[in-house]
Length: 335
Picture 1: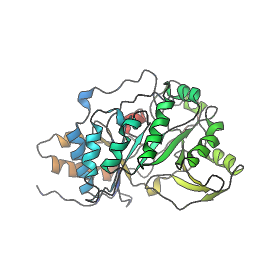
Picture 2: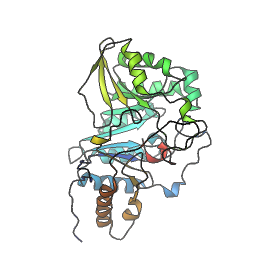
Picture 3: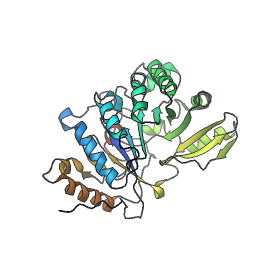
Protein backbone atom coordinates (compact mmCIF):
# COMPACT_ATOMS: atom_id res chain seq x y z
CA UNK A 1 0.00 0.00 0.00
CA UNK A 2 1.41 3.37 -1.02
CA UNK A 3 1.80 5.74 1.91
CA UNK A 4 1.35 9.44 1.29
CA UNK A 5 3.20 12.18 3.13
CA UNK A 6 0.77 15.08 2.77
CA UNK A 7 1.03 17.85 5.35
CA UNK A 8 -1.24 17.60 8.38
CA UNK A 9 -4.15 20.01 7.94
CA UNK A 10 -7.28 19.77 10.09
CA UNK A 11 -10.90 20.37 9.19
CA UNK A 12 -10.57 24.07 9.99
CA UNK A 13 -7.64 24.52 7.59
CA UNK A 14 -5.09 24.77 10.39
CA UNK A 15 -1.66 23.42 9.48
CA UNK A 16 -0.34 21.16 12.25
CA UNK A 17 3.41 21.62 12.61
CA UNK A 18 4.00 21.21 16.36
CA UNK A 19 4.07 17.89 18.26
CA UNK A 20 4.18 17.66 22.03
CA UNK A 21 5.44 14.16 22.70
CA UNK A 22 5.21 12.77 26.22
CA UNK A 23 8.00 10.34 27.13
CA UNK A 24 6.68 9.45 30.60
CA UNK A 25 3.72 10.18 32.86
CA UNK A 26 5.97 9.92 35.93
CA UNK A 27 7.17 12.92 37.88
CA UNK A 28 9.37 13.47 40.92
CA UNK A 29 7.16 16.35 42.11
CA UNK A 30 3.48 16.28 43.10
CA UNK A 31 2.30 19.80 42.27
CA UNK A 32 -1.06 20.29 43.98
CA UNK A 33 -2.80 21.82 40.95
CA UNK A 34 -1.55 19.03 38.66
CA UNK A 35 -2.02 15.73 40.49
CA UNK A 36 -2.95 14.20 43.85
CA UNK A 37 -0.27 13.25 46.36
CA UNK A 38 -1.03 9.54 45.86
CA UNK A 39 -0.84 9.71 42.06
CA UNK A 40 -1.08 6.33 40.34
CA UNK A 41 1.35 6.15 37.44
CA UNK A 42 1.08 3.87 34.43
CA UNK A 43 2.63 0.38 34.43
CA UNK A 44 5.94 0.59 32.57
CA UNK A 45 4.82 -2.10 30.09
CA UNK A 46 2.20 0.29 28.71
CA UNK A 47 4.74 3.00 27.90
CA UNK A 48 6.16 3.25 24.38
CA UNK A 49 9.73 2.10 23.98
CA UNK A 50 12.50 4.48 22.99
CA UNK A 51 12.49 3.00 19.47
CA UNK A 52 8.71 3.44 19.18
CA UNK A 53 8.87 7.06 20.31
CA UNK A 54 11.59 7.69 17.72
CA UNK A 55 9.63 6.01 14.92
CA UNK A 56 6.55 7.95 15.87
CA UNK A 57 8.43 11.25 15.77
CA UNK A 58 9.88 10.42 12.35
CA UNK A 59 6.37 9.69 11.10
CA UNK A 60 5.24 13.13 12.21
CA UNK A 61 8.26 14.83 10.66
CA UNK A 62 7.43 13.11 7.37
CA UNK A 63 3.98 14.73 7.55
CA UNK A 64 5.29 18.25 8.06
CA UNK A 65 5.83 18.57 11.80
CA UNK A 66 8.76 20.95 12.19
CA UNK A 67 8.84 21.39 15.97
CA UNK A 68 8.85 18.69 18.65
CA UNK A 69 8.66 19.35 22.37
CA UNK A 70 9.41 16.44 24.70
CA UNK A 71 7.19 16.51 27.76
CA UNK A 72 5.86 14.39 30.60
CA UNK A 73 5.34 14.04 33.53
CA UNK A 74 8.93 14.98 33.99
CA UNK A 75 10.83 13.83 30.88
CA UNK A 76 14.24 13.81 32.54
CA UNK A 77 13.23 11.10 35.03
CA UNK A 78 13.08 8.63 32.14
CA UNK A 79 16.37 6.80 32.19
CA UNK A 80 16.93 6.64 28.42
CA UNK A 81 15.50 10.01 27.42
CA UNK A 82 18.85 11.53 26.41
CA UNK A 83 19.23 8.78 23.79
CA UNK A 84 15.91 9.88 22.29
CA UNK A 85 16.98 13.53 22.39
CA UNK A 86 20.19 12.64 20.57
CA UNK A 87 18.33 10.60 17.92
CA UNK A 88 15.83 13.39 17.28
CA UNK A 89 18.55 16.02 17.34
CA UNK A 90 20.04 14.35 14.27
CA UNK A 91 16.82 15.22 12.39
CA UNK A 92 17.30 18.97 12.87
CA UNK A 93 17.80 20.37 9.37
CA UNK A 94 16.22 17.26 7.88
CA UNK A 95 12.59 18.35 8.23
CA UNK A 96 12.77 19.12 11.94
CA UNK A 97 13.51 22.76 12.69
CA UNK A 98 13.44 22.75 16.48
CA UNK A 99 13.64 20.25 19.34
CA UNK A 100 12.73 21.52 22.79
CA UNK A 101 11.86 20.10 26.20
CA UNK A 102 9.67 21.08 29.14
CA UNK A 103 11.10 20.17 32.53
CA UNK A 104 10.72 20.92 36.22
CA UNK A 105 14.55 21.20 36.30
CA UNK A 106 15.10 18.93 39.30
CA UNK A 107 17.28 16.69 37.10
CA UNK A 108 18.47 19.40 34.73
CA UNK A 109 21.91 20.09 36.22
CA UNK A 110 23.15 16.63 35.22
CA UNK A 111 21.58 16.71 31.74
CA UNK A 112 21.93 20.32 30.53
CA UNK A 113 25.20 19.78 28.66
CA UNK A 114 23.91 16.64 26.92
CA UNK A 115 20.75 18.46 25.83
CA UNK A 116 22.77 21.30 24.35
CA UNK A 117 25.16 18.88 22.63
CA UNK A 118 22.19 17.07 21.06
CA UNK A 119 20.87 20.23 19.42
CA UNK A 120 18.38 21.56 21.96
CA UNK A 121 18.65 25.35 22.01
CA UNK A 122 15.87 26.37 24.39
CA UNK A 123 13.90 24.77 27.18
CA UNK A 124 10.85 25.55 29.27
CA UNK A 125 11.15 25.20 33.03
CA UNK A 126 8.09 25.01 35.28
CA UNK A 127 8.68 27.26 38.30
CA UNK A 128 5.88 28.86 40.30
CA UNK A 129 7.81 30.48 43.15
CA UNK A 130 11.30 31.37 44.40
CA UNK A 131 10.29 30.86 48.02
CA UNK A 132 11.54 27.50 49.27
CA UNK A 133 8.70 26.94 51.74
CA UNK A 134 6.11 27.88 49.14
CA UNK A 135 7.77 25.63 46.58
CA UNK A 136 7.54 22.71 48.99
CA UNK A 137 3.91 23.55 49.74
CA UNK A 138 2.97 23.64 46.05
CA UNK A 139 5.05 20.69 44.83
CA UNK A 140 4.96 18.61 48.04
CA UNK A 141 8.71 18.21 47.69
CA UNK A 142 11.65 20.29 48.97
CA UNK A 143 13.48 20.59 45.64
CA UNK A 144 13.88 24.32 44.95
CA UNK A 145 17.71 24.27 45.33
CA UNK A 146 17.96 21.51 42.71
CA UNK A 147 15.66 23.43 40.37
CA UNK A 148 17.70 26.63 40.65
CA UNK A 149 20.91 24.64 40.12
CA UNK A 150 19.39 23.12 36.99
CA UNK A 151 18.41 26.52 35.61
CA UNK A 152 21.92 27.84 36.29
CA UNK A 153 23.45 24.81 34.54
CA UNK A 154 21.25 25.36 31.50
CA UNK A 155 22.26 29.00 31.31
CA UNK A 156 25.93 28.04 31.65
CA UNK A 157 25.82 25.76 28.59
CA UNK A 158 23.99 28.33 26.49
CA UNK A 159 20.43 27.00 26.63
CA UNK A 160 17.76 29.68 26.40
CA UNK A 161 15.44 29.27 29.39
CA UNK A 162 11.78 30.26 29.58
CA UNK A 163 10.06 29.91 32.93
CA UNK A 164 6.43 28.80 33.07
CA UNK A 165 4.55 29.86 36.20
CA UNK A 166 0.97 28.87 37.01
CA UNK A 167 -0.77 31.86 38.60
CA UNK A 168 -2.55 30.76 41.78
CA UNK A 169 -4.86 32.96 43.83
CA UNK A 170 -3.89 33.12 47.48
CA UNK A 171 -0.68 31.18 46.90
CA UNK A 172 1.87 32.76 44.57
CA UNK A 173 0.00 35.77 43.15
CA UNK A 174 1.88 38.21 45.38
CA UNK A 175 5.22 36.69 44.38
CA UNK A 176 4.80 36.92 40.61
CA UNK A 177 6.51 40.35 40.25
CA UNK A 178 9.51 39.06 42.21
CA UNK A 179 9.72 35.95 40.03
CA UNK A 180 9.51 38.07 36.87
CA UNK A 181 12.18 40.52 38.06
CA UNK A 182 14.54 37.70 39.02
CA UNK A 183 14.03 35.85 35.73
CA UNK A 184 14.58 38.95 33.60
CA UNK A 185 17.66 39.79 35.63
CA UNK A 186 19.02 36.35 34.77
CA UNK A 187 18.18 36.77 31.08
CA UNK A 188 15.19 34.40 31.11
CA UNK A 189 11.70 34.93 29.74
CA UNK A 190 8.62 34.17 31.82
CA UNK A 191 5.17 32.96 30.80
CA UNK A 192 2.23 33.03 33.19
CA UNK A 193 -0.44 30.33 32.82
CA UNK A 194 -3.98 29.98 34.08
CA UNK A 195 -4.55 26.73 35.97
CA UNK A 196 -6.07 24.10 33.67
CA UNK A 197 -8.94 21.82 34.81
CA UNK A 198 -7.43 18.45 33.86
CA UNK A 199 -7.71 15.43 36.16
CA UNK A 200 -8.83 15.20 39.76
CA UNK A 201 -6.63 16.76 42.42
CA UNK A 202 -6.85 16.73 46.20
CA UNK A 203 -8.40 20.21 46.43
CA UNK A 204 -10.81 22.33 44.41
CA UNK A 205 -9.14 24.31 41.63
CA UNK A 206 -11.65 27.15 41.85
CA UNK A 207 -10.17 28.04 45.25
CA UNK A 208 -6.92 29.12 43.56
CA UNK A 209 -8.07 30.01 40.03
CA UNK A 210 -6.59 33.39 39.12
CA UNK A 211 -7.68 34.97 35.79
CA UNK A 212 -4.64 36.46 34.08
CA UNK A 213 -6.57 39.57 33.11
CA UNK A 214 -6.41 40.51 36.81
CA UNK A 215 -2.71 39.71 36.99
CA UNK A 216 -1.99 41.81 33.92
CA UNK A 217 -3.90 44.77 35.35
CA UNK A 218 -1.84 44.57 38.56
CA UNK A 219 1.40 44.40 36.58
CA UNK A 220 0.37 47.36 34.41
CA UNK A 221 -0.09 49.42 37.56
CA UNK A 222 3.51 48.58 38.45
CA UNK A 223 5.35 48.52 35.11
CA UNK A 224 5.11 49.63 31.49
CA UNK A 225 3.86 46.71 29.37
CA UNK A 226 4.08 46.98 25.58
CA UNK A 227 2.45 44.31 23.35
CA UNK A 228 5.02 42.24 21.45
CA UNK A 229 4.73 40.51 18.08
CA UNK A 230 7.05 37.74 19.34
CA UNK A 231 5.70 34.21 18.79
CA UNK A 232 7.18 30.79 19.56
CA UNK A 233 4.60 28.53 17.91
CA UNK A 234 2.66 28.02 21.13
CA UNK A 235 -0.43 29.75 22.55
CA UNK A 236 1.35 32.47 24.56
CA UNK A 237 0.88 36.14 23.79
CA UNK A 238 3.73 38.41 24.84
CA UNK A 239 4.50 41.85 26.20
CA UNK A 240 7.79 43.61 26.78
CA UNK A 241 8.37 45.18 30.20
CA UNK A 242 10.32 48.44 30.02
CA UNK A 243 11.48 48.45 33.65
CA UNK A 244 12.86 44.90 33.69
CA UNK A 245 14.03 44.78 30.08
CA UNK A 246 12.46 41.38 29.58
CA UNK A 247 9.58 39.60 27.87
CA UNK A 248 6.48 38.23 29.58
CA UNK A 249 3.98 35.78 28.11
CA UNK A 250 0.37 35.01 28.99
CA UNK A 251 -1.37 31.68 28.33
CA UNK A 252 -5.10 32.09 28.92
CA UNK A 253 -7.06 28.89 28.25
CA UNK A 254 -9.97 30.07 30.38
CA UNK A 255 -10.31 33.83 29.91
CA UNK A 256 -9.14 34.35 26.31
CA UNK A 257 -9.54 31.42 23.96
CA UNK A 258 -6.53 30.96 21.65
CA UNK A 259 -7.70 27.99 19.56
CA UNK A 260 -8.18 29.74 16.22
CA UNK A 261 -4.46 29.50 15.46
CA UNK A 262 -3.85 26.07 17.00
CA UNK A 263 -1.00 24.22 15.27
CA UNK A 264 -0.49 21.55 17.96
CA UNK A 265 -1.24 17.94 18.73
CA UNK A 266 -0.21 15.87 21.73
CA UNK A 267 0.80 12.23 22.00
CA UNK A 268 0.86 10.47 25.35
CA UNK A 269 3.59 8.15 26.55
CA UNK A 270 1.30 5.22 25.67
CA UNK A 271 0.89 6.43 22.08
CA UNK A 272 -2.56 7.98 22.33
CA UNK A 273 -2.92 11.07 20.14
CA UNK A 274 -5.12 13.83 21.53
CA UNK A 275 -5.84 16.45 18.85
CA UNK A 276 -6.97 18.87 21.59
CA UNK A 277 -5.68 19.22 25.14
CA UNK A 278 -9.18 20.02 26.37
CA UNK A 279 -11.05 17.45 24.28
CA UNK A 280 -11.80 13.77 24.64
CA UNK A 281 -11.11 12.92 20.99
CA UNK A 282 -8.31 10.33 20.74
CA UNK A 283 -6.55 8.15 18.19
CA UNK A 284 -4.49 5.07 19.13
CA UNK A 285 -1.05 5.28 17.52
CA UNK A 286 0.46 2.46 19.59
CA UNK A 287 -1.76 -0.05 17.80
CA UNK A 288 -0.65 1.37 14.46
CA UNK A 289 3.03 1.19 15.43
CA UNK A 290 2.70 -2.44 16.52
CA UNK A 291 0.65 -3.58 13.52
CA UNK A 292 1.89 -5.61 10.55
CA UNK A 293 1.85 -2.47 8.36
CA UNK A 294 2.88 0.35 10.69
CA UNK A 295 3.68 2.97 8.07
CA UNK A 296 0.30 2.73 6.35
CA UNK A 297 -1.62 2.40 9.61
CA UNK A 298 0.15 5.42 11.09
CA UNK A 299 -0.59 7.51 8.00
CA UNK A 300 -4.28 6.57 8.20
CA UNK A 301 -4.38 7.30 11.93
CA UNK A 302 -2.92 10.78 11.42
CA UNK A 303 -5.47 11.49 8.70
CA UNK A 304 -8.24 10.50 11.11
CA UNK A 305 -6.76 12.72 13.81
CA UNK A 306 -7.01 15.68 11.48
CA UNK A 307 -10.65 14.81 10.75
CA UNK A 308 -11.67 14.73 14.44
CA UNK A 309 -9.61 17.66 15.75
CA UNK A 310 -12.19 20.04 17.27
CA UNK A 311 -12.37 23.73 16.56
CA UNK A 312 -11.72 24.68 20.18
CA UNK A 313 -11.60 23.47 23.77
CA UNK A 314 -14.24 24.30 26.37
CA UNK A 315 -12.28 24.73 29.59
CA UNK A 316 -14.28 26.17 32.51
CA UNK A 317 -13.66 26.75 36.18
CA UNK A 318 -16.81 28.39 37.43
CA UNK A 319 -18.26 26.33 40.26
CA UNK A 320 -16.98 24.76 43.46
CA UNK A 321 -16.85 20.99 43.23
CA UNK A 322 -17.16 20.94 39.44
CA UNK A 323 -15.66 17.97 37.64
CA UNK A 324 -12.47 18.61 35.63
CA UNK A 325 -12.86 19.31 31.92
CA UNK A 326 -11.16 15.98 31.23
CA UNK A 327 -10.50 13.11 33.67
CA UNK A 328 -6.93 12.56 32.49
CA UNK A 329 -4.17 14.53 34.22
CA UNK A 330 -1.84 16.93 32.42
CA UNK A 331 1.03 14.59 33.30
CA UNK A 332 -0.66 11.85 31.27
CA UNK A 333 -1.48 13.99 28.25
CA UNK A 334 1.84 15.83 28.16
CA UNK A 335 2.22 19.54 28.92
